[in-house]
Length: 101
Image 1 (cartoon, rainbow, N blue to C red):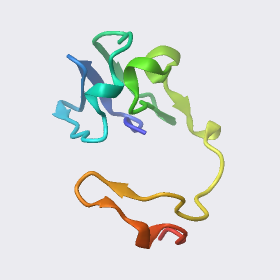
Image 2: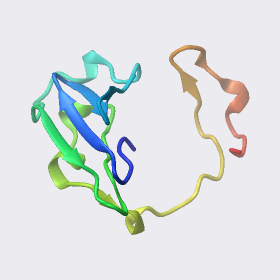
Image 3: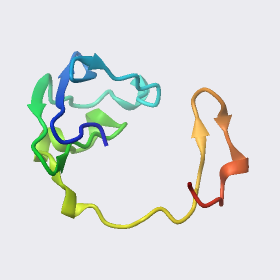
């Protein structure tokens, strides 16, 4: 999830800005984004809706194509951590299988 209700989400030169603050996204790898990029855009996220972007941005559909997502479309809960990886710390096997929180 990228943008919360009331946020202004902008995509400029393949970089994301939330309310004029550049989003630090070390997980968005250039090697995964060589497809068709829909270009620059700007949108205000309406109340009760959320702006969604994938980390494989050039090759997937997201809120840039189909718009923001209403809160009632979110379902499910996090039951356990299936995989844990951090760009700063690498694989974190001690967290796998734990319940979040």
